[in-house]
Image (tube, rainbow, N blue to C red; front, side):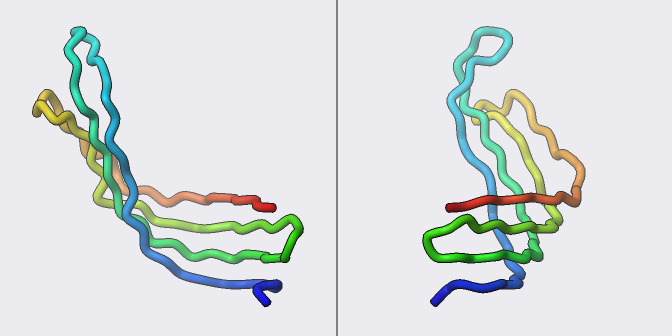
Length: 86
């Protein structure tokens, strides 16, 4: 079965697209994307509570409007994420 402790490494592409109204009342589309490398440790249990902790590095972050109204590139960052499941 899948019960037990698991260690893993992963790469993810994150982001999304949202319809927004800018502060000047113009409808626009906001887009965000990033890349992530993760190291994780997880406790899996069938039909019971499980958890995971991940240490990650996020880079290549970009926030922009579809209309080319503006663009921002936040700095790279490390993060710590906790997850719970049932």
